[in-house]
Image (cartoon, rainbow, N blue to C red; front, side, top):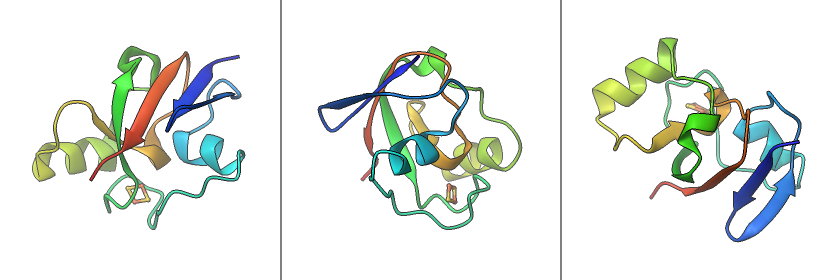
Length: 91
Ligand code: FES
């Protein structure tokens, strides 16, 4: 099972789950709204393991491009985990 590290806490999570739902499963509710990738409420920074997330597409890809987030920012609702990853909140 992939390991998700968030704020120095590490959890084993189901492969293919979104970051948002993986954290919710650990009792950590990130701020979120649309759950479609376009509102930006749940932006996170990937510290390690960006290659282990599903690629951005659709509304998330448009949001990342047009809002001009740094390359290591993703939307937790639209990023599925396929390997070990470390993240923190985007501020
Ligand atoms: S909840 Fe809107 S981008 Fe994730």
